[in-house]
Length: 63
Image 1 (cartoon, helix red, strand yellow):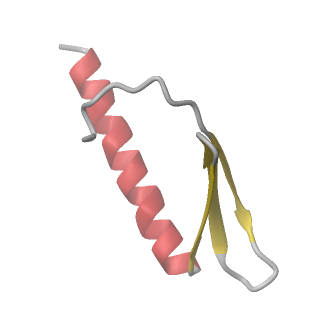
Image 2: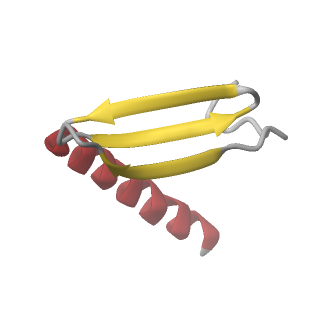
């Protein structure tokens, strides 16, 4: 499955800080629970990538 493949799988995403000073992305769906911890700098890089992807998607919608 790639980024452009559609899927019927539903998942929940939670994002927040941990007691250890990390940022956790917690994905739950399809019977799987996936906690992913990042240091704050990594989390900011991920946020920038998400913003860039959103801008690209927005530009595609205008075409």
